[in-house]
Structure formats: structure tokens, C-alpha cells
Length: 487
Image 1 (cartoon, helix red, strand yellow):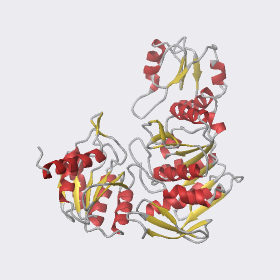
Image 2 (cartoon, rainbow, N blue to C red):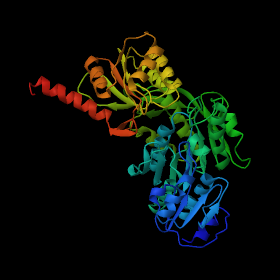
Image 3 (cartoon, rainbow, N blue to C red):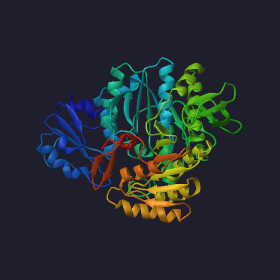
Image 4 (cartoon, one colour):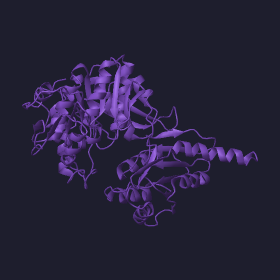
């Protein structure tokens, strides 16, 4: 592709037209034929790497400020906004061949996108999905992603692959950071779904305060043709205010005056650790996950399905077959106890899951959890307080300590628990899980929280492989061998 063709996407002049074969924002990926876009991040300024990109053969540069003497390229006010438009043009505007559905909210994005993928698939649509767990075509993995919403180059490359594979819909999680960092600039979503908003992602390199967080979330709704929102959430009016006057709005919730009203949600009497959702005008929906928070996500999926005029049978079948790795995931074990893996990593998600588990009247809830390092400390405090209120025994351990000491993080959580329940600190997560499983008896629930789908523990810049499910399997394998008298 000619550089002039790319620059037409951002309205920039082309000093010297050349052939561009790659678009990069990491100087280490630069090579002859590359256009290097210098991004300014929280920890590094891409402009410092322009000489390296040029030395590696990059033929052009986009940056803010000024170009090095003799360099070919363009100066822009916001390189991140420019990158989104350049990536779309470079990959041939794949979004134009797809119906895009965005899901946003503090909690429930991953679960809701999985539900929508299953519903659309049941309705006969080949569907792509992009989010925290990576990118998928149907249920087949396509690509990993370090971000909930990928950076523009990866995002448009993924959309190109989905369009080429014949997808008609793509359901994607859109985070507040994605909006703040212009990752989805230039995209128009056929529908955008708002789930909820609670204080999180505030501090550090994320958001300065709750107002900025809410504003970034709301900006998504300027880019949609249809808005579907949770009318029970006090932040919904801020989202709805951004919707174009020509775009329809549909609401859902448990209160009166909504388009899709839930009448009741609770444990499903037909199966353990599942939930039943009663919606006005329909037979009950059955979701194979516990908790009213999962029922709320299902309600959002039902509301969108209705807004898209999907067959209720497809909605029902999709919900009944939804399974989300690391989200209220039941692990089959050869013991009279229950083991659940969940990604709960803040006070709200912790509390929601514990409330759900209490509805099934377990003998005890034994919680194994920690908190991420280099993240707002209120998360660990909130989780500690939730544990004190909702669990019977806490084993505190490493999550992703990053540059912090896992034992120090656990000490902060223990201080928040304040002796309200028996508490142990075992920084080694494998040992902590073994300890919890050794304690669990008939009717107990062992909840492994915080890691969810993640297959690693991050410490001091290194991610070492770690699978909670495999640790559980290892524990029962050891127990089986011991009972058989094997070494």
C-alpha cells in the first residue's frame, strides 16, 4: 500500500510516497517498508525510539512534535487517534463488512460477550468474539491479547481475519481504557450494551477519578447505531445522553418502565450452582452459572437479542450453553465438596460471587485469594472486607504481585479482614490451594479467586506458567496415589 493512501485516512500530506508493507508501533518490529507510529505511553515515549525504528529500516514515521531531520512522515496532534484510523485503512476497513456489538461495564463484560456469542451462533450467525480471554471465531481460538480491547493494529488485523473467515457478527468487550486511548476510534458499532459502573480502574495510569472513568465509558455511545442499557444503574443516564438522537435506545432491568424487565432471578431448582431468570413475556431462562450477577448479564443478552429481533429459541439455547473459562467455573473433583475458579479481583465481584454461593447453602466457604500488585490498594481492602462478611475461612496468597511483595499484599488484606474469620497467609499459591483442598469436607465450597482464566503468575516482570485447574487435578492425583499406597 502506498503511504499516500494511508495518510489519506488521517488527512496528512505525504512528503515522499513509498510502498508500506507493515504498520508498527514497536520500534523492534520496524523493518524496510514499515510505517512506525510513535505512541506516548505512561511508562515510555515512543518518540525516543524513532531513531531505532529508522535504523531498522522504517520508511516513514508518524509522531507528535517534530520529525528527525530527513525523516519521511507526518506530524499529528494525537498519534493514538491517528493509529486507529491508519490501522483500519491498512487492513482494508474490515469492520465495514461486519456487524459490531460492543459490551462495556465495570463487571460482566466477558460473561456477557460469551452469552451473546452463543446466542448469535444459535441463531445461525458465524460470530467472532474479542475480549479479555482473547479473540475467537465461534469457539475456536484465533489470537491472544494482553488487553481487554486490543490496540488498533492487533484489533483491525483480527477484524480482517474474522471478515475473511465469513463472520457476520463480532461481539467485543470495550474497556474504558480503550476509549481513553483511542483504540476503537473510527469504528461504528451496530449496537453497544452498558452493564454497570462502579469505582474501579482509578489511580495510577488508568483514570484520574470516577468522573473521568464514567466519561470514557460514555464516549462509546457516541459510536453506536443502537444503545442497550441497564436502567437500574445510576450511570445509565450519562451513557444514554451520548447516544445520537437518530439511534434507538432499549433498556433492561428489574424495575418498572424498562423494555426488557426481569421479574425474578435465583438458584435454579433443576440443577446445582445454576441460575434461573424470569423475564416478563417469556418462559424462564436457564443459565449454567451461579448468581444473580450472572442473571443480570443474561438479562442484558436477552435485551440485546430482542432488540436485534433474534428468535427467542436461539436466545434460550445460547444462554443454556454458555460456559466461561474462569468465571464461576465448576471444577469436577472426586470429593464431596465443590471447587470453583473465578476471576473476582475486586470487592464488588468478590461480594457478588459470595452472595451467589451463599444461596446454595454451603456448609462453609473457604476462599483462596490475593490481590494484584501495582494496582489501587482499595481493591485489596475491599476484598478483605468482603471476605470477612461472606466467607468462613480465608487463605491469602499470591495473585499477580508484580513489583510488590506477595506477603505484604496479603498482610494488607489480612488487616482489612481484621480477625473476623480464621485467616492464613501462604504466599505460594500452589501450597495455598493444597491447604484449602485438604480442609474441605462434605458440603464445603473452595473458591479460588482472582486468577480465573489466567495461566500465569506475574512477578517482577516475569510471567511464570500457573494453572489453578491443573493444581487442583494435581492435588487429587496425589491423594489418589497416597490412598493406593503409591509413592
